[in-house]
Image (cartoon, rainbow, N blue to C red; front, side, top):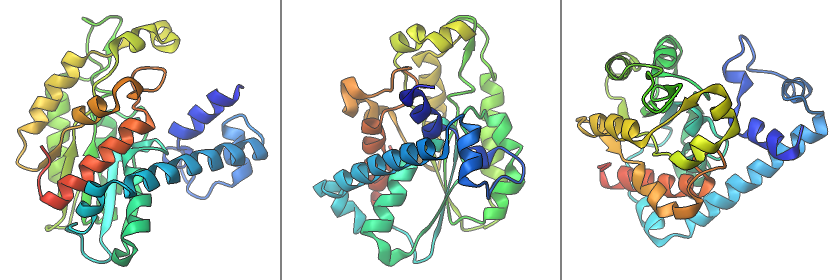
Length: 275
């Protein structure tokens, strides 16, 4: 296994979230799951942690981010929960950057963070985990879902993995049932656009006969943006990142995009709006 492949697997895959009773897996066991030895696993994980810390530190130097950090609506001890797919499960994701940024720059708030996102999850699969989400009793829930639902089979005009009506139904049910705390706050993040050229050229996607289109992502995002909840549009973060917006597969945002998205989340929280 090449080092870049190992890093990508460890970056996006979180076995402890999908294997039964796996919350306390040992490092040797985790390393074995990834086909690595313990040293390789630890070294790769430490590399990702350093990248995450550096990105959070860059965010902390942004004057607008620093100003927004002084106006956050959180109460001391609030519990922040993320549900989503690989865009959030990513160890370098916007939510993980937010975690490091707030624990470093707003340690006075003593915030708690839990990331329940699972790479590859559809809204149907996440809806099946509502009991686990409800047990968290989070004060703030961030939901970023729909990219996997928007996967097309065979070709750009092939069937969606999950129909649009079913996706919207699942998201509505999540919103209605995922929290048992009446005053809990909910924030949506729209799925990020994709680089269609890279997606089409990526060997795994091509070999598997799957693809994504920005038309589908835009259609779903438009539906979310009509919500009465705070909605954070991810598309401007991709624009901000420019040529460095994606990893090699054209689907997953780069850490540069995640930085820009984390800044948008902080701004939405500070200013009470998401669009």
